[in-house]
Picture 1: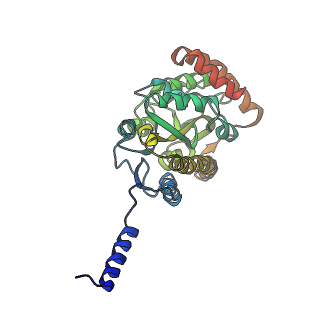
Picture 2: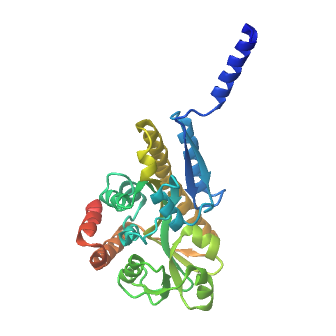
Length: 331
């Protein structure tokens, strides 16, 4: 038989359990990352999870880095299905080839353009978001990781004259926008698998490559390259994406908390990319590699000429409407 004392103890115990138990409204989010655990991008993703949980909107979040949930193409399909809620990944193009528009040559050519064109409100951002929305994916932010330049294992000619043959053969990624851009810049291109790139440079199969940031060239190729030209022709840009199915199941306060966390992380990424580019360009110089100055009127003329040559060629692939959209962001 319960006494008043035992009844009070029982009620107290139940209240303690209730306080330690998640509410029925609490939702757990699965967040996938493709970078190593100690990579700055993963550190940023952990910060996103903490911000979401700290918003007080009944959300918890767990980050799975290092492709633990699968490579980017598989995770992207999981985002579509709603089995992964949020991901930081390289956006694959197998479901919509127009997603390769992210790699238009000189889509952005400096950090100010990067901040503006990679943010909600630009024509490119809106178009890029719409492409993914048609697949059931919500674009939550573009994440630049650094500008891409050209690394060489021997001197080249007319480096700052767009369209003039440079006298070297460089490896280009197997993407139309890269091959078209390299050609407009004046480089002869050849497709080589990234896994075979180092021996190809070592044996002279190729005289250089386009597709790597200053950081990547320093960490992976500084013992074999002699020159680096920071053309800023492309950006190593990944994205924060979210399952539309997950989004639709959340209330407005939860949606706002996620948007705020990911928007801030994407904005911070631009500053991080600029700082990393600056750091590793200096390290390349320290390693004895010639880093060519690419700035001022010479750089702007080069950028303008490549855009004028390459973008009309890409129009047949991507359509006049998309190319006009990209032009509107830089005019």
